[in-house]
Length: 205
Image (cartoon, rainbow, N blue to C red; front, top):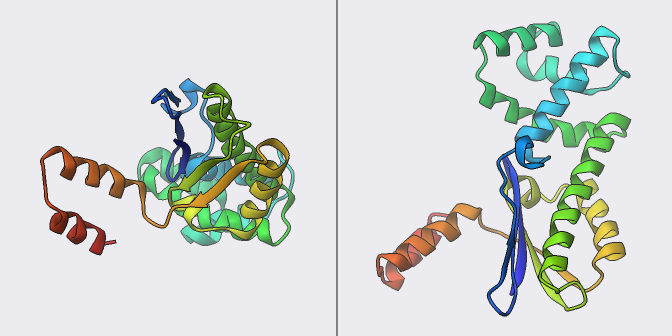
């Protein structure tokens, strides 16, 4: 019994009730209502940076983050390089740690993105607990994925506030291992591998 929320490159959550009933989300990106994860955060970072630079948006330190991270004179140059394939789209993920640094320095737009992520994580956990009738039962909520395992102080504080207000009986636990380990252990169980194989797998992490 419990709920898990994973926030790495993407974001998803799943919950299991004592009866075995499952609550989950499609997690196919924006088309299934998802927001957040490293790719979502970095895309938002670039969006705000581009608008800050050309005057359509409010000033933000995210513009300088994008320029300095990619060694470009302008955010526009980064956008063009992404559009033309000079920069691979996957490199956007590199902006996520910088977003949290800019937020920690007090940048209003960056802090807004971190706050929105905290809302999304809390909402996914709350919906799973509600759908499984576990909101009034002490239940473990495991947080995993690179973004959450980084334990950013601002995000942690915002999650503390949201969980206390909306899910006071939930016990929040941050997973030490990446989610892929669980999938690998399940695969080893499926093929009947012994405990030594599992130990070797865990030793790699």
